[in-house]
Length: 274
Image (cartoon, rainbow, N blue to C red):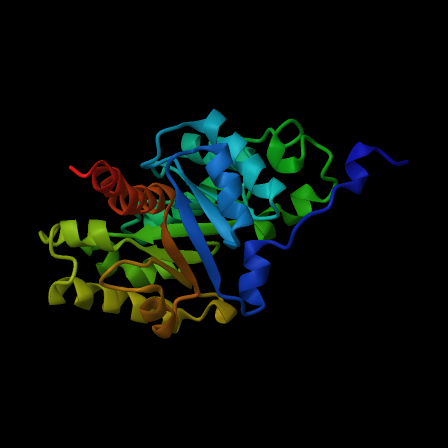
């Protein structure tokens, strides 16, 4: 018996692409604008992170951005504001390809994060899969068999404590990817305005080395990071990163706006001869 959902096509998951050896390049979306989300997706990014930690929006804005990203053939990841069951449940029910938890500082926090992503008996995720977007509102017949394998679970290490406990974080079963957070890491070391400080670089290297050595093929974690002026995308790729975030939508727009004003506003002055 056929039904409307039987013709639904699914794109290859981010986890599948990583397992096949792809390196992924993404963008943070802080504006939570569906139009900017869609433009970003059409631009060729592999995924867009819809940022509920620092972005100016909530669940309703996030689901509209996910729809826009997917309509353009791209994948969406949601960064939640905190490591809580309530936030994880809300984000996952939207039907995201991945979820990112901020400020994970030990194995217990990473284990909690994973448990929030799985239904009982494997976790504690609230069960409403017959009526939420994650299961295509119940039309996804293979949903329960595949939802764990399709979801990329990302934990951010962005503090001195997190670096100290990197090995126990990486060892948590079901934690797929460590995302480095250099700015918060700098702040935790008392070096907020000095991310290039050797102490920050040393802490980054300690965490990076442990994650890369864990080897995702053998049950370890993938390594993700944010390109910065101090650490370019090429720098990160060369150190073994599997995933790189190039920028954020507001940063790209800010630069474009400033460049436009610098290039063209002065022309008015020149034309008027002032």
